[in-house]
Structures are given as structure tokens and as C-alpha cells.
Length: 182
Image (cartoon, rainbow, N blue to C red; front, side, top):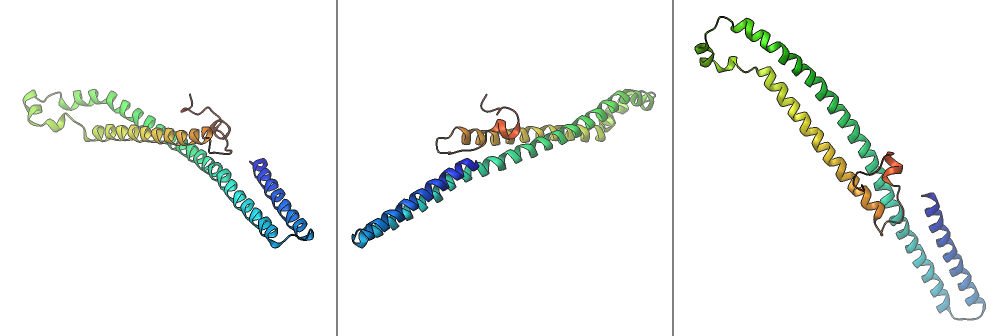
């Protein structure tokens, strides 16, 4: 990245020096002020060119760095949600293993007609809430992975875009191949 900025800076300074030298030669040779104005115009054009080159170079590079940071953040969130999901799954499995024992103990002497009258005895609110939380966590993980692919797509486009002068690749920034490029 630094080499590209240095390249543009050297190009700018070279063009500016040529403009100044050209203007001095024109003035010393007795030419009119038209050549001096031309050298100022060339210097202005090279300055505008430098500014545009820096924008085309630094813009995508900065966005690539921002997106790589966002990818790392999403990976951490996915790991956190996955850990929470796994812990909750273990609790649900443990409760499901206990439930038939509780059911036999509590409902041993109750007649089936009474059970049909009280359907809330069949469903545990705690279990329903835990399963809902598991579904919510899975949805959150899915949305995060979907967002991660969107970011990877933007990063891949910057890598292959003909309008991008230079940007670090996904592989260099994240340390693994871009899933969109495969």
C-alpha cells in the first residue's frame, strides 16, 4: 500500500517539477506568459490527478480493512451464540431425560380423563421457552452468517474490480480463502 502511495507522490512531484522547469525555461527564453500559464495548468492537473489517485487507492483499501474487522467481529458473535446454543441444548437434553421420570412420579395415580381436561399438564412452559430460545439462537447465527457472506462478497468485488488500484485480499486480511471466490 505504501509503495502505491509513494508511486503516486513521485509521479505528482515529477510532473510538478517538469511544469516548473518548463515555465522557467519558457520565461528565460523570452516567451510570453502563455507558457507560464500552461505550466500552472499542468501543475493543477497533476495535483487533481494526485488527489483522485489517492481517493481511488485509499478508499477501497480503507473499506477492505473495515470489512475485515467486521468479519472478525461476526465470527466472534457466531462463536458466542454457538456456545450459548450448545449450553442451552445440553440443559434441554438433561430436562428431556428427566421428564419421563417426573411424569411417572406425578401422574402415576391420575386417570387419563383428568389429563385430557388439563392439557397444560402435558406441556412444560420452561421447555417451550428453552426450545424457542434455541430456535432464536439458530436464527441469529444464520443471520450473522448471511451478513458475513455479504461482507465477503463486497471484499471479493474490491479484489477483482478493475477500478480498484490496490487493496489487500481476503486471504491476506482474514487468513483463509474468501468463501465467495470458491
